[in-house]
Image (tube, rainbow, N blue to C red; front, side, top):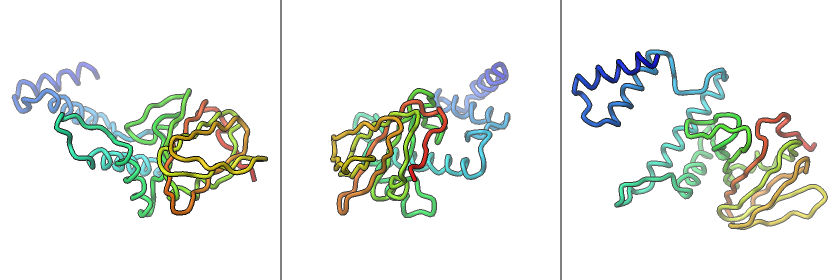
Length: 206
């Protein structure tokens, strides 16, 4: 397959159709992958998972394009743009108000697959239904970092804790926990989990 791909690039170069090397390689790779049945979406997944993968890809691309291009010509995915896109998605039939960026399950093309660390972001109150679920992680330590606004963290046998931007909290293994939004204070938080592939990943406390 490598030889065939190299031949495709060589043929395209000789045609003179692409003076820009980056565009040349992207076009040759796209044609090669299509010819061999690579769809750009994860394999061995059901239709709902594939649809979610595509939806998150589009959301991230939307967030990437939204900031104005800086004079330096360098672009980046900014946190405000991403949070705005996630909040906007809450108005759709299938929202993406909580999204992983690293972990065991590949959720979109801009993902770091890892069995060592899971990393994600959630927005409140849009993700409240999921965040309100009382759960514990038998094999995972979870650290929550507040990125914007505020949230209320509940853990078993303790009074709720209000966390604001810049605050963090470490939830140990097997500790039942859940999150509630604070009225009139939209929030966003990042979560980092150890051992994201070890089962069971999450167990209901109810």
